[in-house]
Image (cartoon, rainbow over all chains, first blue to last red; front, side, top):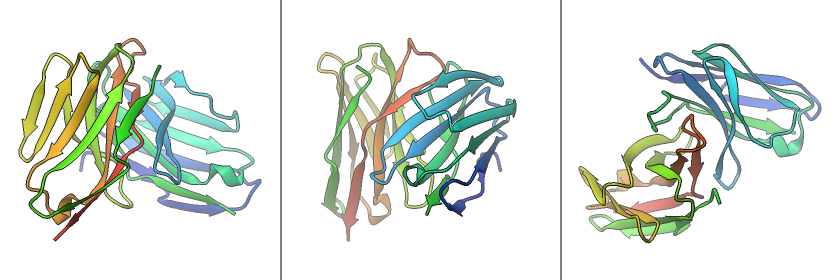
Length: 112
Length: 114
């Protein structure tokens, strides 16, 4: 299936820990994103990479560090997790010039 | 201003009725307006999209109406079905920001009662 996939789907961890979320797309897109959806379901862009280059970096704490090893993969590493980081994180991809973004299934992060 | 304002926050419609969700924006640099549908536990999925040079786009039971002068657009779901119960997001892309950065509305939780 052509899609955007993320692992893990659920992540429960304690404050202060470091965790990573992985994303892969096989749609052949050149741009990938991380979005955060809070408890009120508000969706906000965090980062975007185009061909492995960081192009959008919203005002996100520097505890969040994205990494793109190639244009089909975009990972999100979070250091020193805080309670407020609890949310659903969505990876998405698109092709430059075409507005449609395709979203992954999400990773529900719960920090206790 | 990057904001997209969406209303209502929640909507209850009887089966067979018309669901209408409205969005408004300020930034005239927005050039692409998609609507996404999200079911619980799933990622948002593109439903239908429109560009500002078109006033209406219809795909099956879903129609986007676009009013460029008023900077408003709306989603109409005709003959609403219980399976349409989901959260709907309008969004807008800023052509000047490049790379398809989408600004989302706050979402509308639609419940279609049988």
